[in-house]
Length: 181
View 1 (tube, rainbow, N blue to C red):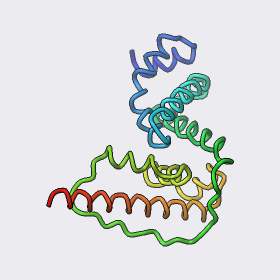
View 2 (view 1 turned 90 degrees about the vertical axis):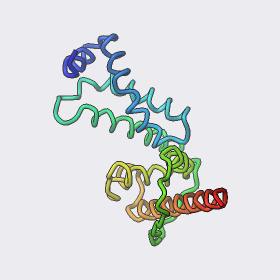
View 3 (view 1 turned 135 degrees about the vertical axis):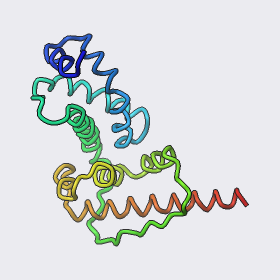
View 4 (view 1 turned 180 degrees about the vertical axis):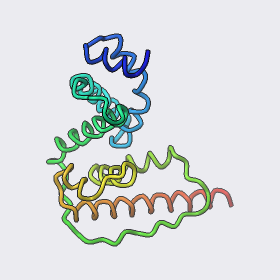
C-alpha cells in the first residue's frame, strides 16, 4: 500500500492503517522524541502523545511538503508542550551574553550513544535550545517564539549547553587517554 493511500485511510479513522503508519514511522520518530526528552520513558510518553495528535490532526495534512517532516514537527511540539508545562518548576535563567566556547576535540570519533546520553543530561531548557538550534536548524528567533523566551536567552542557553557538552566530552577523552596508557 502506498504512503498516500495509507494517509487517506488514516484520515478515515481506519485502525489497521493507523497501526501500519505507527509501525512504519515509530522508530524514526522515537529517535526525534528521545533527543527532546530527559530519558527513555519520557521519550516513549512524548511519542505516544504525538501519535495521538498526529491521528487527530491527520485531516489537516494536505499532501503539501513532507509527511514525515509534518509528523516530526508534531513530535517536537509535543515535547516542547511537556517542557512548558513543567517549566514553572525550573529556575529561570537570566539573559547573559556568553561567548560560545570553541570546541576542540581529539581526532577520535565520539560514540553516538555517548553524545545522546550527554545531550539528555543537559538541563531541560539547554537541551531543548541545543536540539532545536544545532540538530533541527531552528533560528534563535524561532526558538524564542516557540519556547516563549527572548532571543538573548536562547543564545545564552545554547552557549551554556555547548560549554557543558564540551566539558563532558573533554572529561571523557581524558578518562579514555588515561585508560589507554
